[in-house]
Image 1 (cartoon, rainbow, N blue to C red):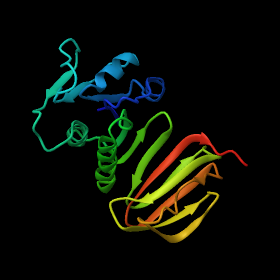
Image 2 (tube, one colour):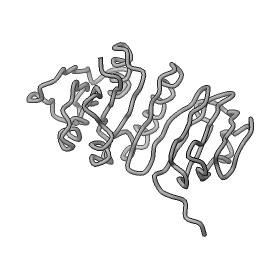
Image 3 (spheres, rainbow, N blue to C red):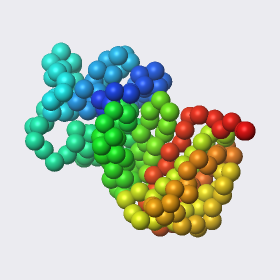
Length: 214
C-alpha cells in the first residue's frame, strides 16, 4: 500500500502547478468527482475516481478504479473519498481543489479536516495561497517557514487552549475564543515553530505569502 493519500477536488481554484509539485509517484491519488480534470491537466494518473458526477462527465476513458455515487446521499464526494481511504488504511492525507468557489463547499472541506484530526489522521488542504489544517490534540511543527503569515482560530468549539512557540506573538496555554479573532495574522519566527493544542480544537492557516515589515 502507498503511504500517503492525495485527494483532488473540483474547486474552481485548484492550482495544478502546486498539485504537480506536491504529488509523487508513491502517493495514492483519488479524484473527487470533477477533480479528475485537474489531475489530467497536471499530468497525474488517478488511482481512483469517486463522485456522483452531477456537475461533470463520468470519466469513461480513464483507466482506474471508479466508484459512482448516488446524487442523493449524506456524504459529500470528498467525505466519501476520505472515508473510503481510511477504510483502506491511510493515515496521511493531502487535499487539493478544496477552496474557492462556493463558500459552503470550502467550509464543508474544513469540517472534513476536523473529522480526520479527531481520528488521529494527519491532513492538510493546499491551495495557491495557504496550507490549512486542524489540530485536536498534541503538537504540530511548522518547519522552514520563517517569515510566513500564520493564523489560528477555534474550530468546532467555542474556545480552545493553545501554546505557540516560535511565532511573533507567542502563547502559553492561552484561551482563544470563537467570538474574538485574536489568532489572526501572526508571523512564523522560527524554522521549527510549534503549535500545541491543550483543549478544544483549532483550525490553522499558513499563508505562502511572506510578512512584509512596514
